[in-house]
Image (tube, rainbow, N blue to C red; front, side, top):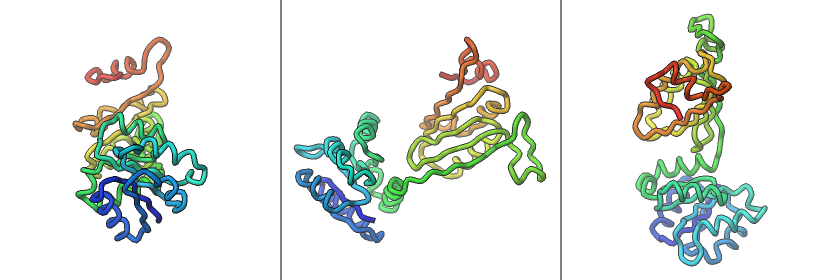
Length: 242
């Protein structure tokens, strides 16, 4: 693949270039944002690794300029910055960046850095069915073809928050899968289609809820004048929903 690195740090540029080239990729770079726009257009890379804090033209402005060129529509823009604030991550995404990586966390671990970059460039979705049964779980050998747990489906799209649909007993299988991955942080949105028992009964058994640092938002429909939070908390009074 073809990468273009834009960073005013010679050290960062050298490290990223070395790691990418060692993996067999073609790399060009620029130490200043001036002239980088024309160089990127000429090179037509698969991805641009872009610093934020640079003199005269910062990474946000450069990202906006790149996104104005139709010929760069398929080019991934990955911010590689020393800044790690959520505000900067949200702003980078709003101006067209496809991903945001923190230098300090990655450049000390070249293998992880390469994995994170390639994950953002490849951009793949993984759909998994953890439970498909209705009303009651039926875990038996006869049900191995389709599974015996009640509804839970997950959709993972690279570094985006994990989407989880319903929390039947299948969500315990998903919990085991996530815990086995030893991720430093799980960010997910749990979407409940409707509050029937077989769609919410395993919420308390979703282990990542109890891990410090994880961020899991639970979203569900109201029923008349009763909010989803009130419906669920009436059954699981030890949980707080918003």
